[in-house]
Image (tube, rainbow, N blue to C red; front, side):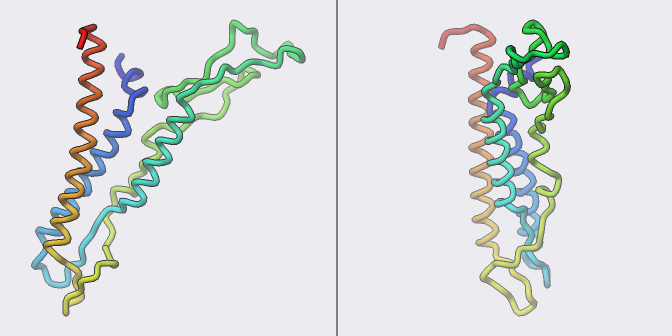
Length: 179
């Protein structure tokens, strides 16, 4: 019931940011836990790939936020064309992506939000570009890992706080209270 309402907000995108932050936090915590392990190579999730996926998802939501009426060619309307009462608006929410084109047939299906965030974003890769290398070939640094963990926690906390604020606004609207 509330899913279509929530899909029109930024809550689903913020949810993806919070989930990514949680998964990255687990990887960074593993790096800190293995700080004294010989030959351990630090791992991390690709923040750049996640940010690119986030950018694509936001652009797709903006593109789908303004539905356009799908009008038939009235002057050259064929008998197979739908009448004005049969016209459908393109769904703005990513939750119902089916679209009927001007001939009444299924058109291009819009991808769901989850499609922009593949499982490969959750796969931790070994980090090779650290400036610090030990005699055993490891690249571990407690300072570097702690700094990355604090940055990650700040971004995740921001996403959760904005999500909480939006949920509070929705609760106010639903309960019809005056703020």
